[in-house]
Length: 113
Length: 113
Figure 1: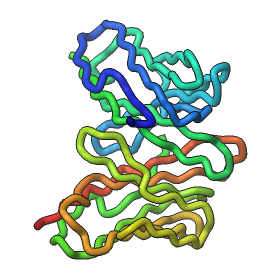
Figure 2: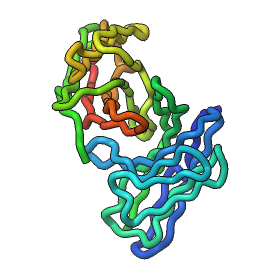
Figure 3: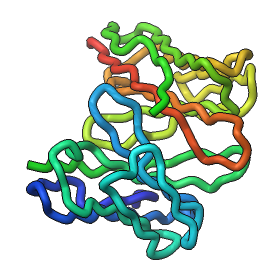
């Protein structure tokens, strides 16, 4: 079974709808992240969480919110989806420390019409 | 957000050939990671580098942490069709206590049988 799972894998929605993307991990990592990937661009950090009580904004947090329900679960919400939020969304986890390495989920392809 | 310069952007090679790609930055990093992303999937970690000058192999893949700490190289020897995909680098700045990785825009590799 995959260490980092994301649901749904694909989603098509309409402008103005609220959308939630979910991420679960079995790696036992404290740190979790949400990234967005657009064609021709590197991954951009939306939000990150170092533990259940610690949530921080990344580079492009406007229009997004997150919830860390447990060590293993981190969800991303689009409160009112807009077309330019059409992208691939990836969840990642890491253990922290000097050799901190990020492990990614399979991604969610979101299309906002 | 800030991005690394990754080159080449794309390359077509014949099966059996060796492949080289690199990432460069204007600032130093403490860690370099190399990922491969297949279509419709999340990035999979290939190699992690934690020290300047470090040379690490993973099967036919070899990566090096540049001695200036501003670059890294990935080589693939004797390419095969399943090497096709997008290869990303990621660098971690040395600022203490941070999580943040800067991602390259990827090298798209196509292998001709």
